[in-house]
Structure formats: C-alpha cells, structure tokens
Image 1 (cartoon, rainbow, N blue to C red):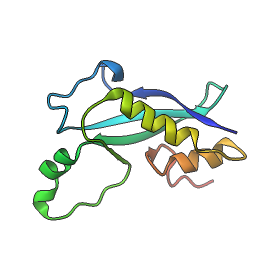
Image 2: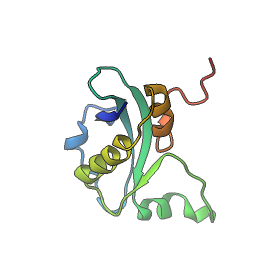
Image 3: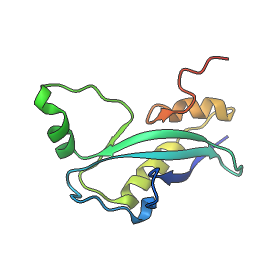
Length: 118
C-alpha cells in the first residue's frame, strides 16, 4: 500500500498556494497535511511547522537552546518546494496497511492519532 499527500491547509481562509509570508526568508507557518492511501478518499491529518533558520534564530535561540519536532526547515518560502518535500517523504512511506503507513508519516508531523491506544 502507498500513501499520498491529498491536501495542504493553513487553517485559514487563505489557500496554501496563495499564501506569501511578509518575509520569505524569515517565517514560521503551521500547516495541516492530509495524508491518505492512494486511490481512496480517506486520510489522516498531520501538523507540520514550516520555517526558516532565521525564524528559529529570532523566535527561540535567545534562550540558548530549543527542542523541536514536526518541523520542515527551508531556506526561503516556496510553496512548490514545500509540497515536493512533503510528497517525496509521504510517497516513500509504504506498508502492509494504512495504519503502518500513518505511523511512518507521523515522524514528520504531529499526527491526529498520536498516542492513540486501542
């Protein structure tokens, strides 16, 4: 089984493809990525912080250190590059079922079912 990125959302009225930060070389932006099995409508949601090194420096490093997960660090804002990086990673996640794939995808984004216990 294979997964694909089905949608990227900013949780706002602005579409991901239309968004432009004020400073393309210093920004941080939370996105919601819908990942699902190829050929099916269903999917799971993942939260990813897309940001630049300059933004990390400005927002966090004044404290001297920072811990972070679920982050894609890019040199400047480029929605095509963000999409291609997400596509490349997710399409590389394979497994015997979608639950196995979803856990692999959770390595790059905060998964809606993270820490879920059956």
